[in-house]
Image (cartoon, rainbow, N blue to C red; front, side, top):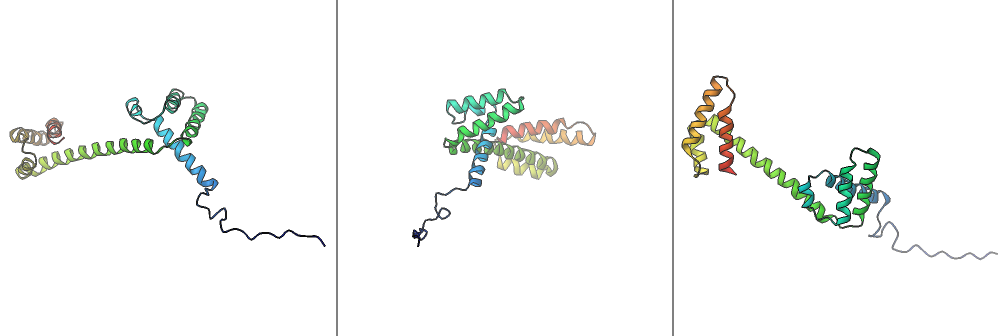
Length: 177
């Protein structure tokens, strides 16, 4: 009779039940995400890149990637290297800075649309729209706006380029923003 070692019953902490367990697929997703952040860094302008909280090694890697962008294989490997560097760093500050940049752009776009809407409202709404605008922006020059509105209307009737409408937009932008 051979002696068999009795196997211990499996412990309560199984590999899949452990909170620290990260699957291989999850690790790959995280690496791809970090590499995507690195790619976003490479595509920033010089001024935007300077505002990013990067250490010297990572900044140098990003600058090198920008230089070799037209070398397909070298660029791909450099992006992988940037992803590797980012794995050993806390990327939350970098992601936050990128998010702030995107939000700043969205806010500028929203302001631009507000000016466009105000211009369109003035051109289509007449004196009522002008009165409403002046109530919201008392610092605006009523006379100048009215003059530009009339010119824009005349140019539209004569099928001329909307020069006055553009001038109105520029003036409203200076008042609103």
